[in-house]
Image 1: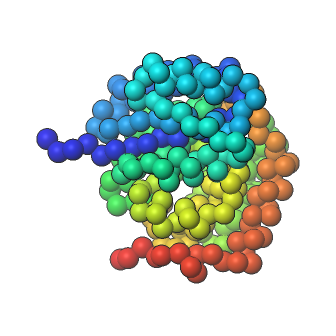
Image 2: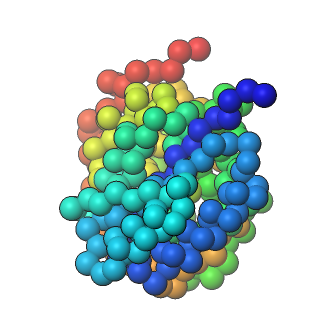
Image 3: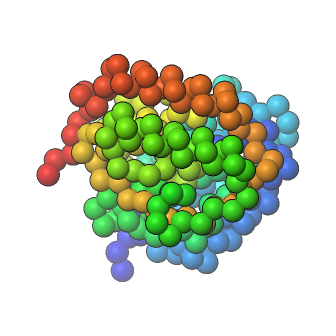
Length: 247
């Protein structure tokens, strides 16, 4: 039998002492049962938490050799994901939100798509077949408007920029991630825009997604950061400087 492909899964966290242990247990149990064709590991990336999140992460790492934890002194989901991805030596890197809003049954097919020639694989709440539960009208409207704006300005095809459920190949980490400047919530959008505009293939997995009412995401602050990021990319067009994927 050949060597299994390796996957590193980043879980960025900030003050998640209530959910962390339960979510990691759920994730490790699922992967052990349904993801045995990959050699996987989980890295909890603590984003300067002020509660017991880091201590809990360290306890989980002691109990399970498949789990490790790193600490960052600054907040920022993008910063945490980039740190884990760039430090990993695996064939594939991924990340998901700690609340596991996206049904884990979509993770294996999303990652396996990268073995079929895709470079980036994303969970999409807008692709045909996706199911979304519990999302309020405001967040649903802002999300739809945001992706429509991206398509209007940049003429790209991906249908969901912000779903916290993504995986990329080692090549994308080496060639695209160094050009992604944002360290916060716009990280996802910038990654996808640079990847598609640079000729990389993006796979979309329609996900079943359940809203987490306890989410700490600040909608308006995040929206401001997203709009500022789109304006920066419109002006600078950084894909002119990325290494295009060879045909």
